[in-house]
Length: 124
Image (cartoon, rainbow, N blue to C red; front, side, top):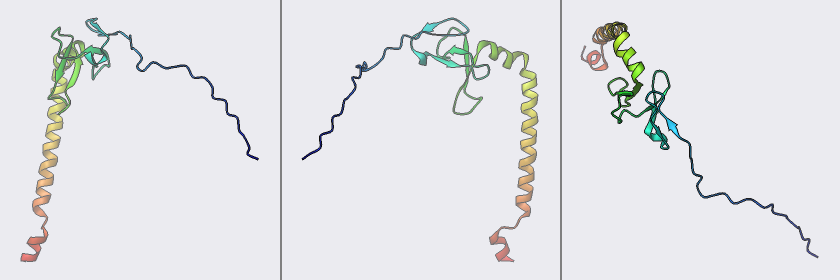
């Protein structure tokens, strides 16, 4: 005699294939609104949601040279502070860091030139 097992499968409500996202995103600086989240980015300093620098309304600035391959995006408030009010202080830090990097490179070069490599030891 075979044993029969009864299994009850609960009903599962149908889920739509794709839910519509009606979220409206807005720039914290200019107030521009869009349902497309990729129209916005975050300020790399303060974190505000801002329009991508592609828009020409001046609420955000992109600085490709700041962080290499990844352009930095700043809201206009942070950009004015970074390149305005605090520009001299940032430049002093940058020059100090550059001087330290130069000194370290000179130290490495000097030590490297004073260290014999394998081929020089074999010649002697």
